[in-house]
Length: 169
Image: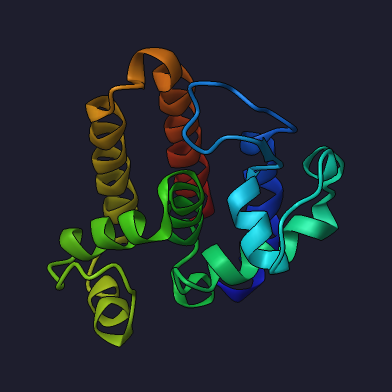
């Protein structure tokens, strides 16, 4: 829903936390959930040494809106489902999250939510979609080779997202 972006961004930033540069994280240097590569893409230039450590919410909010929320059609999704897709899209890529919901609602899984996907979503109970998305997301995490390292945190995040999404419906 259009009015949910700010609420969802606040919840997302609680999940994402601050600056990290874990050697086993394929995203590499990250702050407020934004990787160095994504920030460089957004800026159209290379990030200078130390610049990632000084990111603020005002630096990253436009990135989350344009590259994640808008790509997933967050303004057009039912409340709760918007949060569930947004959080997973940020964590694992918008294409993966979009393909998952497309498969769930029986649409062609091309990774781009469009009019047919939005129409198909309307045919389902939102709580059912959120719960199915939770299961697909968890199965994905458990299939990753880095689950031993990051799995506990991913699973907790996924469960928190499910619980909050169901409350938003």
